[in-house]
Image (tube, rainbow, N blue to C red; front, side, top):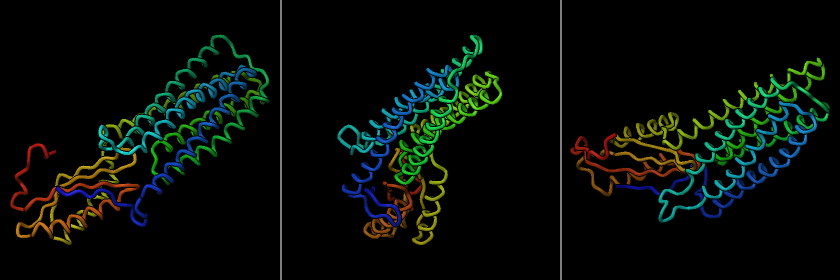
Length: 320
């Protein structure tokens, strides 16, 4: 059994303790900004909902409540995800990112149900709107701030390969869509005097949020269930095919998963019977390094070496 503990991505230096701390601090800073902005915007939206009586503005505020709770959990999860492996968690703690993203998706879906309920309630009880101008200013300002914040979170999340930040950025952009819908509704009410635009756009916002929440939960469940990434699979097989052609090897039982920050890969490498263990070890190490270098941000590769004469004598617990 061969194991390569850790290799950096191509063109990136080895992630030592100082670099890892820098990455963690960068992500924590972005998440703290997200939490602070979410709290301020929540207060502004609640104020807007109270003074306007708008179902659409209320829907925007309700979504922000779930957003604040989700970001608070994500901030805790981000700290936990950077905790190194220990005696009870041999593979680290970064898989908590999927739990956080699933919770965020569930809370978005819950907000969608609450918004839909409030819109229907308004339909039966009648629509009464006040101070539409102030509501438009507050909603438009919130949308602008969230647009900048959401795009920034997704950019940092992609650069740092953080599922937590990307999920949070998607949630913030979902809030932008909600605010934009609310703003359009208020503008139409202002221009036409027809107050039913308000519940109509509230329902549309609920549908959009429900779709976003379901999408986030599905992606999180895929991660928790170790769903294989087709793009990663192709990259690994292309590199393995090239290495096997170069060294006269073959491979099987390729498996890989992503735990939130780390890619884990394992496979069997088959060598000619006459090759020495020393030579096979050197080649396996080269193959492992090449595979790990293709995985971002970090990859851990484990190979099992076997002679060609024993290639088809599989241990039952290794076959998939």
